[in-house]
Amino acid sequence: MSKTLTILGGLAVAGVLGAGGWYASQHSEASLITAAQAQEATADTKDVQTLPDVVLGQEDAPVTVIEYASFTCPHCAHWHETEFPTLKKDYIDTGKVKFIQREVYFDKFGIWAGLIAQCGGDPKYYAISNMLFDKQKEWIGDGKQQTIADNLRKIGLQAGLSQDQVNACMSDEKRAEQLVATYQKNASADKIDATPTFLIDGEKHANMAWDDFKKILDDELAKKAN
Image 1 (cartoon, helix red, strand yellow):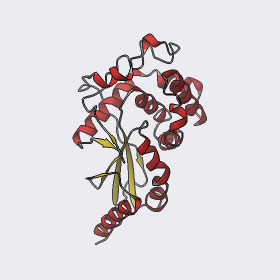
Image 2 (image 1 turned 60 degrees about the vertical axis):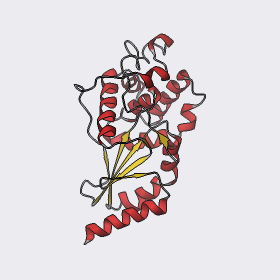
Image 3 (image 1 turned 120 degrees about the vertical axis):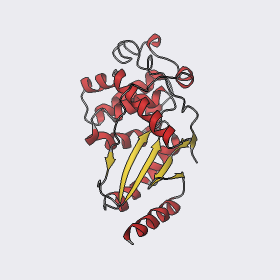
Image 4 (image 1 turned 90 degrees about the horizontal axis):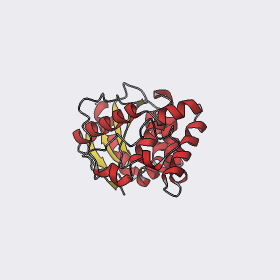
């Protein structure tokens, strides 16, 4: 199963965080746009600096797996719970696969989660990302923005970030613009229309059972060995 991507046109960042920062302004309703506004709005991000990929595994691994995933996508959370641990243990940790996660945003809540995931820099990115997937149901809770904001803050603190770090990251409009610009550039270039979607050595694949995923990896590794 996968979640269909319908907003490749973009998200408006101005207002997502609110004037002066949504968190610093005590989560006031006036400083936040609605999810519907976030989905319908467009943003000109051509002059915004995009962000580099964060690599998990050895840079010179023979096979590269890129996953397009949303922190608010339940199918992505399920994949990270059931399939990712085996991929990491058998392929990433053994130097066979270089893994890259690219974030997709369906709404402002995904952007907020992305700000928390990247708050500790590259060394903490995948640890925090895994926490966001593992605890997805918990931090989304009742779906209200106050609940989600508070729960994301808790995850940041649990990951070892300071309160000042969390506040600064969640109020960083420039970083949010970079996240959206990076998402738009990569997802458009790779023609991503659902999550999770995988690029295995450049070839696009929809979500699939682990046995099928493993076969593709093993076939690619066999090609590289010849």
